[in-house]
Length: 166
Image 1 (cartoon, helix red, strand yellow):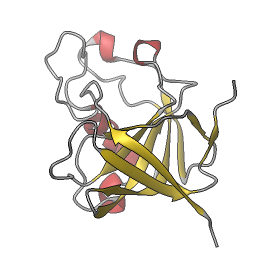
Image 2: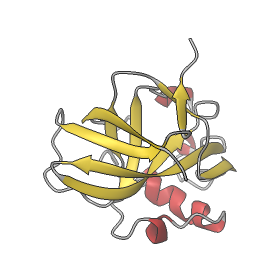
Image 3: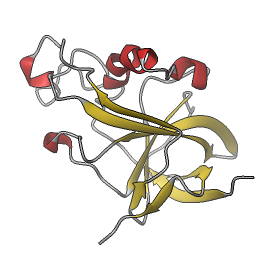
């Protein structure tokens, strides 16, 4: 039987690239949300986000922690995903990346949501979007009333994360 860990944090905010909320912003070279762009390639590699998360919201929930974590044992490691080579803007054509996913639950405002931790692996993440080890990104269904700064929790297998070495 697996052991589980609860990671407490606060709702954070990101760059709105995953959801596509920043499409058209000069700092975002992508034609639509990065999750939507990655989806068909992930599905071809055996991970169907819509099957894993009924009612999937096409963006991530950013959970800011008081400590740094390194993902060690994903449920779905997808390495060298070439998801951006066909983007019309040459600046969006990033090299293939490693994406790791782990099943999780999210607790917010007395409700519980199932989801996947979305972990663009730091070893392949573009330097223009450096990895923050104190933030967990989660794919889940839409969470109504989600408010920046409010308490939120992530429940996952205890062996998913380890402390980031100094």
